[in-house]
Length: 419
Image 1 (cartoon, rainbow, N blue to C red):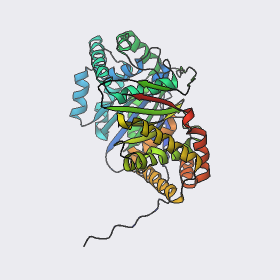
Image 2 (image 1 turned 135 degrees about the horizontal axis):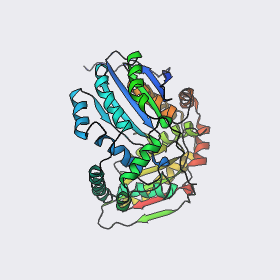
Image 3 (image 1 turned 90 degrees about the horizontal axis):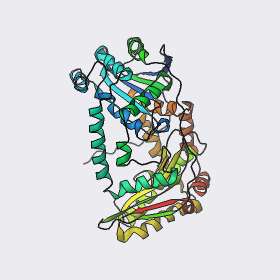
Image 4 (image 1 turned 30 degrees about the vertical axis):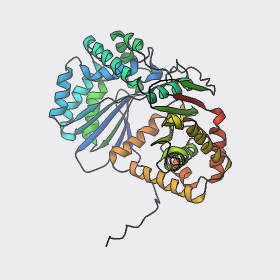
């Protein structure tokens, strides 16, 4: 006989561990999560050096991508070999708003790896040869991406929401890459990779030793004023856009609108509402359009929040014969949330799903550091995490319907179809 399933327990309490905060001599704040028993540390050095701080389009991503390609004292091969030899890792993830330098290392090898990182962050070389190779690769990747309906649909809806000159709305083109010069990268680096634009998040086996090493090496990053974001006004108009691509089997659908960032008073409620609509596998869009109708394999809704703005959209890819019925059902589910109260059972299931996800996000020092980073970077208090928990636990069906009336009207949406 099969053993009985383990009992299901409600998530009763979620507490975010608060970090220790200290500052390096150049003013960089360090948020320290000292947790865990393994001699491993994660260091994430975050610069406010993303798209809103560019003077030239694509300068942010390109500058970050070329940081590892050499510095005054290390070639790209030497950088890679050192991290391989000492069992560490170095990556430079880029978001819309920031460029991050992410390091994992055994604590005992920090003396070997942090000097390299410091050299990269104070004296990168940006070799012209590497820039040329990067541009050539990017143009090839772009050519491939532009053969995909879903990529074209995403590029189109973000451009229509924010505008073609907005940091969150512009799209890369071959000529945008070709217009980049080495001087553009140097200028972007010098203006934005400064102590005034930097925060550091450390987690794992931290402590006084790590603090001293950070001061020794990251304390070299020069001071500088905080960069000013360039953010033109957004004037999105609800419209329908159809991009014909004969010969493609499926059509990509994106239906969405401008929303807001995490600081907005309705963000937490929208977090729950979006989950009900299309934010998890048991969502209404999934049950209706995938499970019941069989129009698509995958459909979802998302609310992406940036530092200064945000947007919502529903996305799916369907056979062309299911295009109009799918759009009709998406509108139906939006309108149903505006007219009917969510049932107690469904709302409880969504609460448990979201609280379970947040519980997973607090498992281990590296995950905790990720949550702390999200709130701190976006200018929020860590107490706002508790407010999110409170909203998930207590939001009622009436409030959800009110939010749907405000933000999910089909008449307010931009609709993009590619295929």
